[in-house]
Image (cartoon, rainbow over the protein chains, first blue to last red):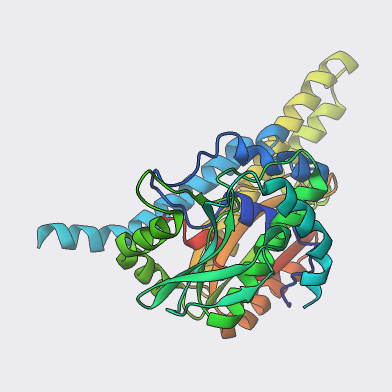
Length: 88
Length: 278
């Protein structure tokens, strides 16, 4: 299957990335963004059902468990490198 | 370009109202893999001129703005800003091949002694090694979104047919008087829910390990409620070598062909999910 990036059908995917992700500058030269993270909330809510499963409730615990499982998998892979560095 | 004329009128108005507020901030779109100093034209948010501030072999792609975040209650306005942000990142991505996109509304301000421009340079200088290594990590790669949905009704139906526990309980219900049957129904619902979660677990781990083979890196995102008929059981951001996404697509085809399953495959996106630090 081919990936799509049609600006209408994938607007939510775009917002998820542009508003919540990307490189973060950790320095006090950044203007205060208090309240700004909320900027896309209404828009995303309007784009139909952007409630997360957490609100939906149905598979909340499941979702969290799955994500935890994945983090574990990731750490398992990273660990050997870290310990090698430390013992050296 | 089309954008210039499109924003032309708006820009005039914006400049007039901003005349009092000096444009001492630098809105940063992305860091690009090039040490060039040049203008990309008035393609920025509200028609601002986008240009680069270089340091060694990297540069920040910016526009001059007041030291105030972009904020609006008007959804259309926000939408236009976000899409423009993305267009600029795309333009830089296309031009220089590798970018580290920043999140919307990242503005560097001036300080008592230092101009915003100088602060951008100092930031590039201080963070140079980290930025350079992040550029190395995403070079030649793009981000793809993979969302897997299933039809919960269909899955529940299938489980009802295949799970001995569920079938036994259903048989039992038939023999119970009405009042008791209600309690049993509840019990049955819980059992189905439990088994569905177990099934989702299986599928997730299965799909994850299949997909993992074709991608360079992966981020597991929260699942979302999208529409009532379908339930998202997997939401991934995948970092993939740009010429290798067809393999991922083929893998996703296999999932998409399964009865009751649907896959959404989006991208290529600039690597938003892989530059924020784990």
